[in-house]
Image (cartoon, rainbow, N blue to C red; front, top):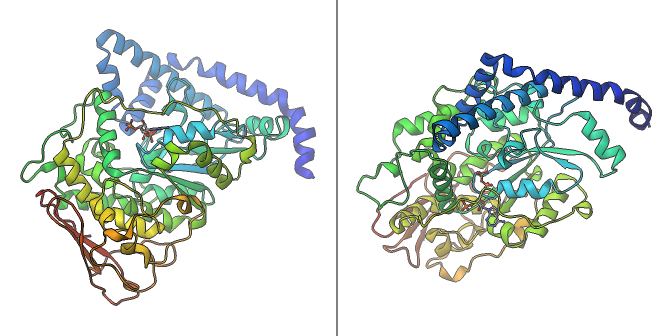
Length: 487
Ligand SMILES: Nc1ncnc2c1ncn2[C@@H]1O[C@H](COP(=O)(O)OS(=O)(=O)O)[C@@H](OP(=O)(O)O)[C@H]1O
C-alpha cells in the first residue's frame, strides 16, 4: 500500500526532478573530453581489465584505429561519468547473473532475455553487443583497487526511473536487471565478491563442450588481432607447453582463488587470464570453476543451460530461464536472433591431435561436472562418452534450481566395459560435501582408462570406501598423446 502510494503519488511528483537530474548528468558528462587525464585514466583501467582492446585499434591501422580509439575512449568516459552522477537515483545490484562460461552462448542468451519487457542488462554503450551486456567490474574495469566496490558496481545498472516505467507504466511485471560477464565464471575469487553485492541473486551458467569453447576463445582473440603465443591449430608436440601445467601456474591461480574479497587484483592477472593457454584450459574445467559459487549461493538459485540444448531449442530454454529468474514467460516477445559473438572461422580448424588431447584433458573434469549435475552431455569427451551415466549415476546430485537437466538425454550405458555397480564411495555428490560445497579431492576412488585411440573404454573402478571423500581419477591416453590427469 505504502509502496503503491509512493509509486503512484510521490514518484510522479518527483518525476520532473529526476528527469532534470538525468539531463543534467548527461550534459555534465559532455564536458568530460575537456578533462583528458580522466578519460585516459578510465580507458587505461578498462584496457587493464580487457587487455585485448588495444589490438582492436591496431587492426584498423594508425589513422582509422586512432580515430576509433579516440571516439571510444571519450564515449566510454562520458558513460562512466554519467552513471556515477546518477548513482543517487537508486541504481541497484543485479537480480541475476549470467555467470559464464565464456563462448557458451552467453551473449545470445542475454539478448533473448532482454526481449522480455521487464528485463534489462547493464547501462553500457550501445555500440557493441558486449558493451551493454557485461560489466567486467570484478575484473577491475573501474580499477583493480575498485574491483570489490559495491557502489561502483551499482553504477552499471539502470536507475529507479526505469523500474518505475517498467513496473508501473508498462505493467510488465517485476523489473529485473542482470550482468552477463562470462569471465566471472573462470575467476574463482569473483564468487565471494558477487555474493557480497548480491547474495540472493540467481545464477545462470551456460555450459558448452570445453574443447569447442577453447577453440572459440582462440578464434575470437585471433579475429581481434591478438598475437597469441599458442595455437590450437598446430599439431601436438612432445612436452607441449600449451598443455603444461607448471607448479608456478597452479600456485598462481590458487593464490588468486584465495584473494580476500576486498583485496586489489594482482597486477598481471588479466594478461595471464586472456593470453595464457593454461588459463583457457583451466576455465574449461567447469566443475572446479562452479565450485566456489556453490560455496556462496544456494543450489536452488543456480540454473544450468547446455549449449546444444540452447541452440536447438532456444525459445523453450529462454522461457525456462525467465521462469527461473522470476519473470513471466508469457510476456516474452520472442524473435529469432542471429548467434551472438559468432567467431568467423575463415577456414581455420583445430588440429585433430589437439582435439584428442583436449578431449582427454577435459574428460575427468567433465565427468565430475556430470556427477554434480546428474546428467551428461554428448561432448567431445571419449571418457564420459565411453563410461556413460553409470560412472556418475550412483552419486546423489545437488538439486539445482533448473529443470533443464531433466530434459537432456542420458548417454548410453552399454559402452561401459566394466560398469560402476553400486554406490561409489558413499552417497554424496562427487566434488560436493553434501552442503552444496565442492570438496577437495582425496584418494582416487574411480580410475577409468581410455585405450589408445580413444575407442570403447576399459573402465576400472575402485572405491575408497569413505563416505566423506569421493573423487574420480582419470588416466587417459588418447591417440598416443599420453596425457594423464589426476585430480
Ligand atoms: N543461437 C546460436 N547458435 C549457434 N551458436 C551460437 C548461438 N548463439 C551463440 N552461439 C555461439 O556462442 C559463441 C559465443 O558465446 P558467448 O556469447 O558466450 O561469447 S563471449 O564469451 O561473450 O565472447 C560463439 O561460438 P563460436 O562461433 O564457436 O565462436 C557463437 O557462434
